[in-house]
Length: 194
Image (tube, rainbow, N blue to C red; front, side):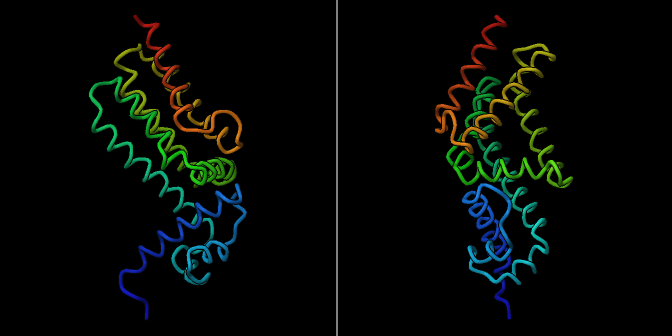
């Protein structure tokens, strides 16, 4: 008989094991059996909770999005004014939890998977829209709409680019350097408006 209350714990263990396995391999070519083994559960239980591997991968992506969203919500609630909002968005994207090697590898693998999986593509569209909205909430106070949109797109591309470089171990691999470079761009971009 299953233990009451274990399902959320086991699901979370499977999601954590998925991130770990993807981080180690750098790709989504891990099996449910390998993930279940890492999580300390049977393959049958993993299938019971998530069905197919695709469903576990989608749950993992939703989990990463949820964590990022919660971190952003906390950081934005402490920000005073639009410029601090921009810094909060940048800081969270390069925080220790978000910019760790396993999470970065998972994001990169999900970007690749989104090329063929409509469900993953939808999740990445949600992420991109949230990032854009959060950046616009700060940039709109300083720039005309068209310029704010272009600047938000550039910042988003820089964030994604540093994630790719981190995954490939090319360029600045520490979060502080990456965040500083994005902040330098923001400072330069906003200084042109005065």
